Image 1 (cartoon, helix red, strand yellow):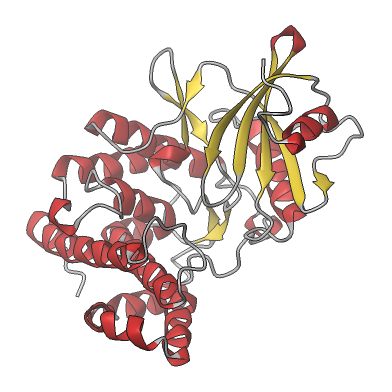
Image 2: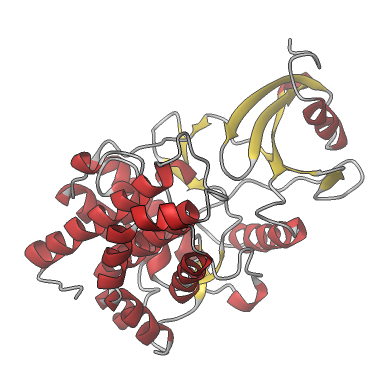
Length: 355
């Protein structure tokens, strides 16, 4: 049995606040955003306890309100259900303890998460799950969702961030990045597409997940099928390209953005699984114009992510966690190489030209 000498005292205190006399705690993640724990108490009662990163989400009440709105909406519909948000012993959804902020969810038994895609079937099921999630939110009034991170998938905002960082003049890193900056300028046709899109009423603002990696799907251990998306803090108003685009960006190669450029491939079976799975889940929610533009989604998100990685590198790595000094530079190079290969693939395989 763990004791306070081998675990953070804050976890024990937070568990008690949500009504759980601690018996066992298991750390599930400690990534860039939140710290998440599986907490069990007497009588086999188990919850998920999460320490909210208030540096990223400086107004945690917003993400709690959004989650409760989404949970309530999906609870009243057939289809995907998400973990229930839990109240504390005092009836609160959040516990603020000095610099830490805590919340709790019901624990879904026999569940697990995965990381890198391995099979077409796994990718198809994940894409279907994300599509079904958005389909379940299609009649939710998007105006009720508060943007948790304003400008999160705003390509103009991200490009302007990069220009601002360049203007600050990090001389050595700017010199190292000249080739990557040239490639970003060469792909500004994607910014032109984005600007036409946001001016076209056929491209709707709707609830989107905004962080649709494979690792943000909860799977059932009994049949290995998806249960629901998790990590919904970025679920907020957005455009059609965000979720399918991020799936393509993070899954189509079978490797992640920290892998070497030599290992980047475009898996035809992975790409088709993402597109067909997502369309199967989302049904007829998208307009004809949005559906006709689906192949633009991957390039938009890859381009945007390359800009974000390079901006962080030029800012001396203030956002993304790194293991070595050049990692954000290499991540940006990885994404730009992926963009180039995906553009060639789309033209050869689908006759779809990005430029």
